[in-house]
Amino acid sequence: QLSASRRLYQWLYDENDGKKRRWTVVGAGMAACVLTAGYWIGYMYYKRELRELSKKAKEMERLKAKALKKNRLHNQSMLLLVEGAQLEEEEKEAKRRRTEEAQNFARFIDE
Figure 1 (cartoon, rainbow, N blue to C red):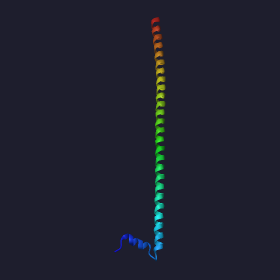
Figure 2 (cartoon, helix red, strand yellow; figure 1 turned 120 degrees about the horizontal axis):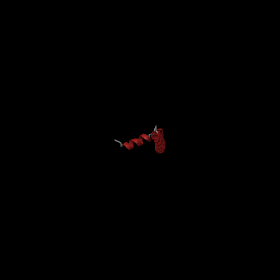
Figure 3 (cartoon, rainbow, N blue to C red; figure 1 turned 180 degrees about the horizontal axis):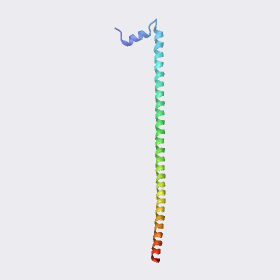
Figure 4 (cartoon, rainbow, N blue to C red; figure 1 turned 135 degrees about the vertical axis):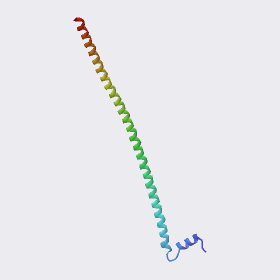
């Protein structure tokens, strides 16, 4: 009864097939290293892309909020301008009505 490590050693260093098996194991190890490194590099690239995308999204959100704020201020100023124009119109209308009433009153007194 041989231990597992001893059986592995004998399997790798067999006279007939040992060399081929050793190179197969080395190749498999190298392939595993390359695949792991490739996966790790891809994962890091993916994380960096996500980070950049989230930065861009935050920047877009900030610009959008800024534009909305600016637009809201612009809309408020436009509303104030419109309200001011309406007040001016109402004042003109009231003044016209007062002068008309004064003229009517003057005509009434003259008669």
